[in-house]
Length: 394
Image (tube, rainbow, N blue to C red; front, top):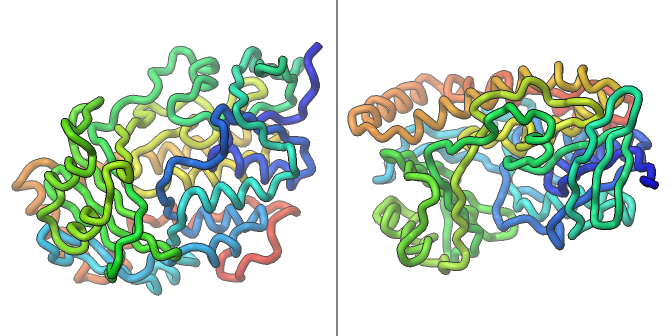
């Protein structure tokens, strides 16, 4: 006979753990099922914008993360030769959006989210399969190696290749290739002193950002066919593509070892889902709205999903109504930005760079307009919202 679990979360990443923490705050019994042997994520950093930090305030974690994170302050956008196209201002961003962007390692965020949960909540090395989505008159069911679980609510946080999404919406085409691949590295770079920056080339992007612990987070992207890999190793591939770009890029590549470099093709949901729920199952994060990383909003939107779902956990249509239009709009904007900053036309990149430089000269506030309606989002009011958030972040 199936055991009764009030809420089952499938997936122990950022989306799943934030949802579990928010639902636990509402007094719900939550079980998190993670198929990996540990919660430690693949080594990379995450940027958290003011919208996500305000969502973390809801579960009492916002200020802790702000204190741990490196502030992604003054910096800007450069060309491969090093010319500044636009300079960013932490003060301008904070004034416009109620707080600046911060950067920290994903593992740090995961550790603090997991610490919000009672011991035994998270079960690792426990793959789960949705066997019944449930309905108003019956619970949902999830199969595990230890038996079947019944749930009043199943939260699907199983990522871009979500098996739960396929089960709920079998007619949906699923995730498709964005047209570019990414590389990421988090390493110490001795003697490195630089302002955070992103560099746009022709069909290529590079970003370099310092972390609070002294390491450097660097990422790259390039337009390339899906499924590719370097003929030797990915560090060598980065050297071929970016080794001649401006400082500190050569220093970062010199400090990296081949095993430090992660490469992943980028996939997204080009066609939005018809809903973010079906029966007693709700989708969060990449399972609901995988998007290109070009706005840095994938993880941020997942955190938003989690606290909004906790707010509407007894009314899943209200959850879909709150999240589907917003995430669809953010995802579409991320696609537009990817087309701009990964442009492959030589003439087009000249026009793009000149336009960005002119926009920047008009004032940093104009350059920040692209995040209006995104970074200024605020979570729904609820009695369990943190009373510790700074006044400017409520």
